[in-house]
Image 1: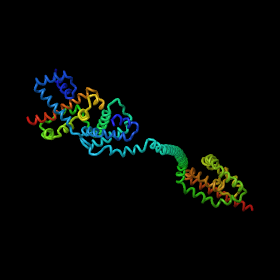
Image 2: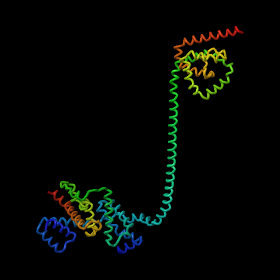
Image 3: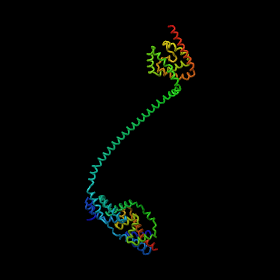
Image 4: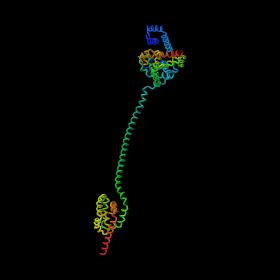
Length: 286
Length: 181
């Protein structure tokens, strides 16, 4: 028998778990070995001390301390508690669910509307921005021409000053109706005049003298028109239109007039002289 | 009135029988809790919890097991919950690896000079050992009943009990011997 087996037999003997034969074998081994006898005695002493542990008693009656809780729980049986729950829980749950669902739906709708409004606002802003940017980009091109025309303001101012006194003379002619119609036409369709202007310019520019000669016959009918070159022969326009056209013409002519400025003055002087001669001849005839 | 009759009446809803049954087991419940937990306050709290559980779950008790064994099982469960609440995580193996310092004079004085040296030694046992010792010596349960109460194999119960006694013997005598030597 090994030491472990002897040790186990000692333990079992303390618990009264050994048979009579096992107890006899153990006693024989212990009597022969002093160490085994010492160990057995110590274990037996420990066991005796454990058996002699003082009986501990609670300072208070634990049952009395918990009885109020137990009786209150007994006074409120499960039926009462379930009734209370049925009164409160279902209604509260339903209300919470309904309110929460309604609120969630409302919030979803509001969010959808807000998203739609926001998207439309953004689209409108973009459209307005595109329109303004497009409208601003177009005038930039004529502005460039205007800037170029700004360099010739003195020429523009000179023309009205020169032809101002001569304007009343055509007003006496029977062409006011035509002028009015032309004014209306000019108001109605200004781009057409602009389209007609380039050819007029081409007619005026290279052959400076021939148009002057062609212009003279119609001006002869009024007889008092001294400067047929100034009056647009294609369409006898009204003054505002003519002024506008002159300004456009001046834009192109300005540079040429600067070069040929002396020639024009000579032509005007010649024409004036011719008219004076004609008037003097008429007076003489009269 | 006998315990079996009290149990039957209490299970049928007799409130007085239930209270009388609780009073009959009150001291044993408190004693086990006291030696397992090691202090009076925790023992009172645990005993109250045990009695309340018995009050509420008495209808689940079946006569297959001894009533005292069933009660001690509840005691051990409540005490284990208390241990877990205190986060006392010293395992049995860890405790076995501890080499006692034989030059610690204070321990020798505590173990040899005081009359409650065995209680101090019990307090130094691992929890499982402590429960087995308490059930064996204070509640006088057999190996099988301890195994049922603690839900442990029979051999494990024996092993725990034998090791617990060996450790107590070492605590009470070996320290004294080392100090003298």
